[in-house]
Image 1 (tube, one colour):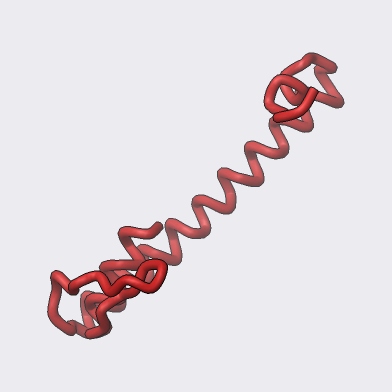
Image 2: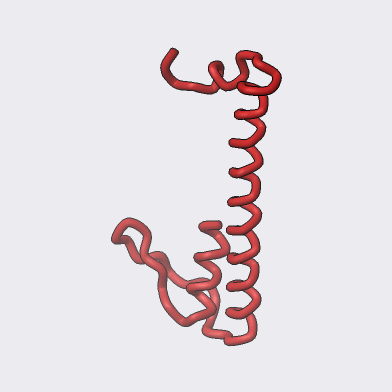
Length: 78
């Protein structure tokens, strides 16, 4: 996600900033590649969200259906 966001900002013709530091652009402004980078960034975000939801669902399945200690082992505090 950060890499695709960085590339997308490059193709928009902007130098991205990361915690206040300007990162030099590696690519020139390009409208067609910007669209591709934007779509890639969007798809990766959706995939990441789906994987997160599946992970939470699997943890709850182990806790409430299988009644094993998988969820308790993942917690920071015990």
